[in-house]
Length: 114
Length: 115
Image 1 (cartoon, rainbow over the protein chains, first blue to last red):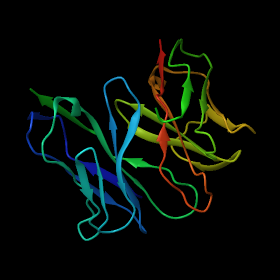
Image 2: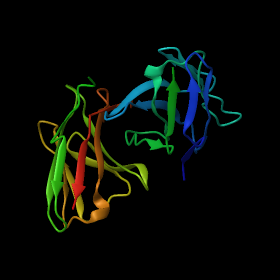
Image 3: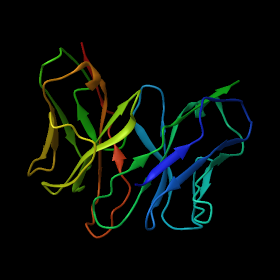
Image 4: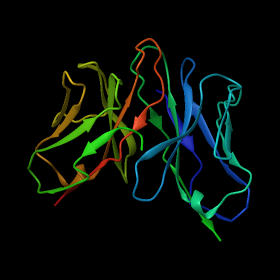
């Protein structure tokens, strides 16, 4: 079945460092891909999305490109801030129709130190 | 604020008991999804309703059930609770246009603790 694999965390970076969180997926058809972020004690917030191959999603300085050839959707940010400390989830929504369920990776904890 | 509301925010109960979690979707959204977030299983899809009808089922236990009412709010019922049911339960909504499944917006979650 469909699945998402994220790099193991936690990831610890200094402020202004470059961030990459790897995400690869296995899916039939043409899934849409998402990154969600969960700040401490809060729910999930959509960070960015891409719905077809070669699409680039971007938001708040974060970017991810839908790479069908490598089945990847890696999250990047050029300069992280302490406020970016959170858990990041890669997810896919596969197939067609209105089922639309999301399949999540295990989450990657990011800690940014001043 | 996603526009999705969930109540209660926290719930503490005992094994064997039954609880009901409530979700109100964003205005105009027709689909409601329930997810469970636990330390050992991660984030898992439980069940989806679309305009009052069950649309998809995931890893939902037989002790759990859900429904979506005519006003589109949804309830997740958990019965014969076990310690392992302790988790964060999220509701998400989407699909204003039934022909174009779109982004799911998540509520703040209900944290269930079973003692």
